[in-house]
Image (tube, rainbow, N blue to C red; front, side, top):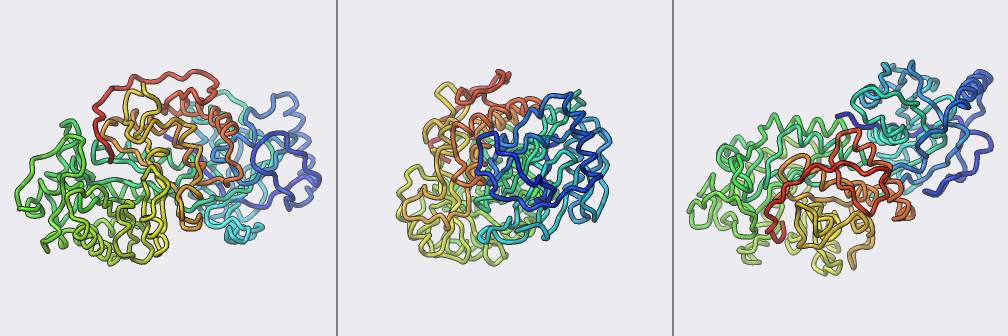
Length: 576
């Protein structure tokens, strides 16, 4: 299913005296550098304006974007209408982003939208990878756009997106798609005036890590489902997909040196279903698909607990060497690999080595939570040794915040999923050099129910409606942890009670965009009243794209969407 593309910020013609903003939203730009239009441009603008006077204004406002841009300057006199003969012109290094943009826009518009390489700035729709635009290549700290920022300019004569990197160009293209009418998400041609609101957006992310987690261990999801989740993340500028690949109920990644992990450990799931696993070719496909959309895959091999599926496949890894029965329930904390046996560390080295070799991204997640039956000193010694095995692969260790007491390794990242913002042990780990990904269970655990009558999900961390998912600040959430130690945010979706793609989407939407805005937008733009208004406009987009979502009463949807029947499932698990 196609989704919006994004483009890099760049210099564009701007009126000498910009019109005053006419809508609420992020802080407007004080000054926007630009050039004076020549006679040909003025003539083209006049002709286009004459046609626009016969049509209604753009149905989307510049301030309707989710996540909220850092800066914008609306110009209601400069709306642009995409014509049927439009050509996407792109600097050669940005061609893949331009091709994706064309793929996203062709189905609904029916326009051919050819992509042409160009080194010129002229054209109706121009994408430019350039460090020549003001601030394009500079770091955010110095006022530049950094690695993911972009500038988007819409005038009466065209649209230009400029950025210093392909990732920034991609994010700009996603913004452009949101500025088109909601019908742009249709898979078939729609009779529509494809108008874009005039003005300029200059944008960049607050945090470098913005992600979601999909638990494929409790219930297995085929490759196509995972790819669709990648598209959902990319739509809202989330840039990491954490895959929870192993747990008591199933082992989901093939490991050549330990083949029974997938063959036997992958044959179960919650409720007794058939399970499944990803071949290494499957996993490479997911990683490549995500990378094209500027999403980094973060694989998790959960250790030393949550390992029943591995112990069924290889009983020699179990304490006592007795094979446990396969497990298809939802309890936690009862399994662990034998930390006193050297074969366990050979197993860990082989598994993390193969997974690291398949994963181009910098991260490898070790899990580390809920190993309730492992004594504290033994647990700490196991984690410290496992961390060094991950570091030896060249990857950076990520783990749940239960890893905090273990010795620090360079670059280590702890993923905090608590519900109480006062956590001295995690704060101490930060003082020793750890960085944090924040995933508070009572704010962004997307397996929590929206309300008491939500047909699937848990409530051990509380009910999480859209307002609760949005109304917190990652930079100040944990006592004793400075904002600069926060790498970003991640919204986990555990799947004990979630078994289908429709159910995944129902739990993701509309909360996923709320988390995306926390990770991307400046804190100064966070405003619940404004966000819920902007979010409401995305309901028709999801409907057009065939995305299942919860019609939260928190949000003033323009029309009541149809919600597929959800199957009520056992939700007895207490935590992960």
